[in-house]
Length: 157
Image 1 (cartoon, helix red, strand yellow):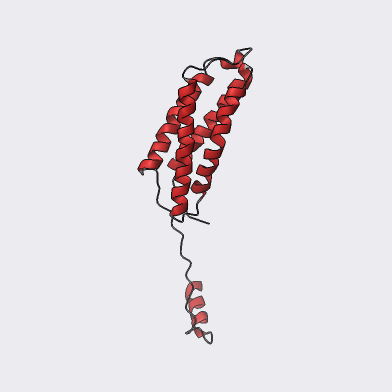
Image 2: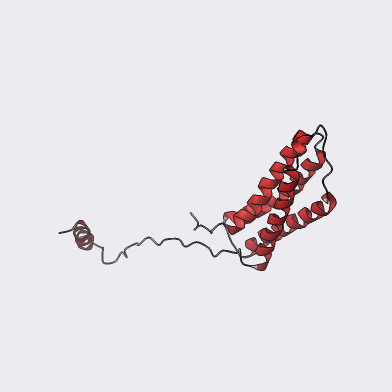
């Protein structure tokens, strides 16, 4: 007799077993991805575009400059980064309104709060090395911004 059958017989023979339903664990399913929804697809595209710009600035040789380097198109970039932060917060609010209790909701809020500070750090840099480091931090944040939305959702734990 297999162990499974023996266990089933033992449970069935237990007094009161007929009254107690068997508890079968249910696997939690992953929430649906929001990556294809217009708001989140827009966030991903904007983050990737800004990341490419930051990477180009960072790789342009700023690191070896004695002073911070003027970054072409900085004012437009700053405005676009502010818009992205606003969209991230909008995504957070959207997920909160849906009753979503996942990490994405919290991460989007965190990015919306961190992005202005990372942009300000680039502006405050006084040497090329400081500017390079600030651009690198900004690049990582923008990469994460797209990555968290594109990552396959995981079931709640």
